[in-house]
Length: 304
Ligand code: SAM
Image 1 (cartoon, protein in one colour):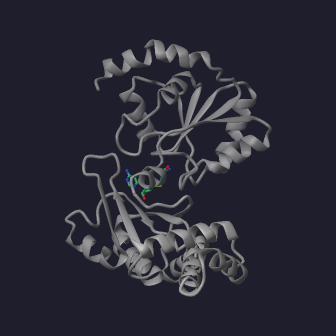
Image 2 (cartoon, helix red, strand yellow):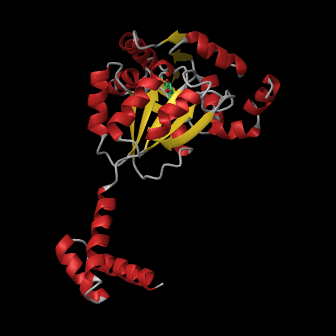
Image 3 (spheres, helix red, strand yellow):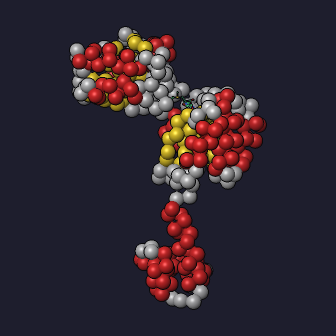
């Protein structure tokens, strides 16, 4: 997409529709930016960045590059992990004076393993409004393409660098029946993958989501037993940005189902479906109707 295409887009009728939504003054706008591919930014985010009086950013050079791609020029102020609290006070004063301030990080969603949360906290504590402009985040992008089936996920962010602390965190997650999502730096990837296998065991699935949305994107899924080998054989193994996802522990539901099947299996040898379901309900405390359905399925399957 050329700069003139972008200009056409930014000035198109759809953007006029966007502009009709209200973007109140005196508000902090938390704007997600691309995690690789520069086109992964919403029209609304572009509109807001064009409207803002100033943009608070993790690294002014990175944000300047992004804005240049979209032909946007705005005053930038640095808001990184070392000055977030001080900057927050200045931003509160500017918002109280009626400015619209956008908050961005280098990539993805501010406040997600990135600076931003302290500023949002201070702005809200001052009674001012905060409006999110949603967009890319590496964790959710990776989850969406992982194929790990689970209604729940747990975002663990970066693991501690020290082995002992890292293992303590991992052990605290061992029984969690949710997909686990980690960010990891490339120089620690081999060590971390070994630690994941050590704590979660060989059979759980891991998904490597590397360089998402970029030219050399790779998404690879395998049992933890094979993870170190995959990394070793991958020419790019210790380079690039990674999200790691690990299959969660079996849910209680899975355990309940397993137990119900085991008990019904024994009872169906001796009793009718109805009696088996009734006895299984007394033994397990599970619902009789659900056990009746399960018993019926098991009986039919056995007769096929
Ligand atoms: N705020 C960002 C977000 O919403 O995803 C995360 C920032 S955090 C400092 C950077 C980490 O996110 C990287 O070390 C990596 O683990 C992950 N990450 C960011 N971009 C990525 C990409 N394109 N592919 C894979 N992982 C990525």
